[in-house]
Image 1 (cartoon, helix red, strand yellow):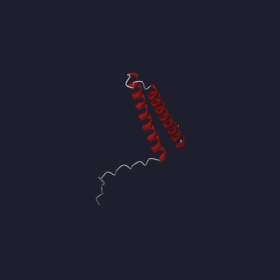
Image 2 (cartoon, rainbow, N blue to C red):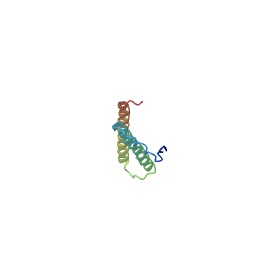
Image 3 (cartoon, rainbow, N blue to C red):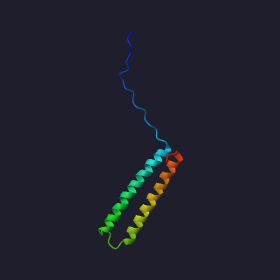
Length: 85
C-alpha cells in the first residue's frame, strides 16, 4: 500500500495572551508614549515655544511623570502576579 503523505502544513497555533501579558503590553506602550511626550514637551520648552507659560510646562511634565510612574507600577505588579522577575 502506498503511504499517504501530508504535504499541507498545519498553521502554528495562535498564542493566547493572558490578561497579565495584555496588561504588560498596554502599560509598556503607555510608558513609551509618555516618555516621548515628556521629551517633546521638554524640548519645546527649551526652545522657548511656550511663552510665559512655565506653569503650564511644569504641570504638563508633572502629569506625564505621574502617568509614566503609574504605568510602571502596574507593569511591575502584573509581572509579579504572573510570576516573572
